[in-house]
Length: 458
Image (cartoon, rainbow, N blue to C red):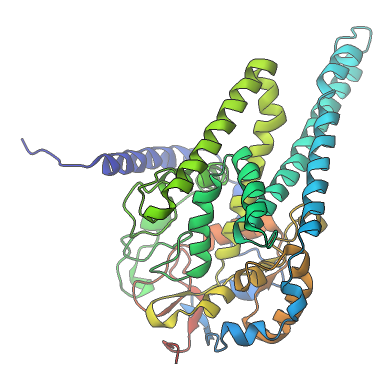
């Protein structure tokens, strides 16, 4: 009898593939009429031109950026690159105060409703139901805002990892390590891979995360689109798509840290941020990876101590659900920063740092809440990719200069975030195996842009 020689990693991947197929076909049996309303481009007026709108394979041409990073830097006043530790600490203090106030407010919700309302049998049933709804509405409000505050703290620790929080690396690493560890992010390990992501942004061969699938990865034949049965590859019901999207929103970041999901495909599976010997790290960086792991272990220990003191249910309501919301916002922001029909990927000599840095998009993420709670990390993300050491409080003004200089190479979208998430998730499916400048193709092999020529850097 023939024996299969499968490595443990291959066994895991094959098992996961068959489980997904089972779930996919099971969900096809369920009603999906309401979800079908979410399908299609559905973009705002500022974004309609970015999605394929017909059966034309590619509808517009694209000429890549010609300027160097130094030329772009000279267009922005030097004062905007200055870091002020006290200003950064003020933002940190503000976020910590907001987190504490929210906690103090919510810590009394259950006891107040239990003693004053829910257990008072003299109230009529309608009144008790109304009070119960009010009880859970207050919890929803807490989860929403505590999730935003937690994401804002994560962003400040992310600035520490870039050295944008302060010119003092000890201050940056101390604050970043404590905050990220408390949010179950291995600070030094993630800092190392994330900085390499910035250095190689949107290089198909060297980028660290959100490396797109290619035509051959999905097994799509390299023939004219009209000769491909696209339903064989993308025949997903809206309900199944929603299931996969929700799964990714909650679990993608831990999965990336653990197994390099959506990371560089040249790395062996699984490549973990918790493994000091992983190809992600040089030998000299291994002690920092171990220190990051210690920080995570301490955070887990504190979590279990809290559960013993206050109970698992309470800890999940106070900390667990806001943490999941932080994961949701993190995945949403980073995915939409790097995934859009107009964002190019580069191969070989066509890639330069400036071209890679410009290949991201600013978004009106949650309006004023994104600016206030999330420190404008999505509103002013393009300038961050050009100059990651620029502090966030200077990004708004710097973006005005950058936008003027870049012209058509500056990308911005005011599309509502959840709509943009659904649109990009359904539109950006794969890129071609060949070519120096690549754009996402949709479920029918169409793309919004194509390179006017395979331009390499002179």
